[in-house]
Image (cartoon, rainbow, N blue to C red; front, side, top):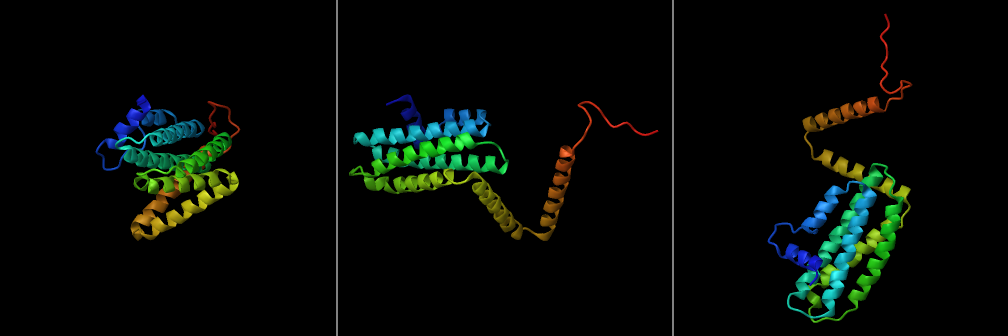
Length: 211
């Protein structure tokens, strides 16, 4: 068993309320990379490793294989979700991620083809991981469709979704809390506008007071 496979096996077998979908080392790598294009590339690498682990596990029937395949497919699905979350956040902040989205579309076409091949594998323990496999397929198809979508359209959809969610949250708030929230948002917007206000002053210069 490879070191990576052992790390994944230890991660999925650890007793946790919400099982981590990344190994400790992978989580550290993600924390160190804040730039969205680089973070997406890391996630794609982790997703590819998960599918390779599934492929290898299905080549030989071994005790506990079905659990490993099931949990690894679940981790893969959550990695794909994480990729979409990073993309949506970058679009929300108007960051350039064209290269990353192209890489995602290319990689996910490969992932989908591999998952479809895995789906054709007949195995006696298939019923124990079939649901996770179907979910992984559906998530990959949805993510690939988004990656192939016009970025401007996707950015607009993200903004519309954010607005709907904000209205839903506000509908559940007490009037006093809602008033305080809007006052805080107004203050933040005014401060942001001041920071962005155009000026002809050079760096380090200040306005002189009139006598």
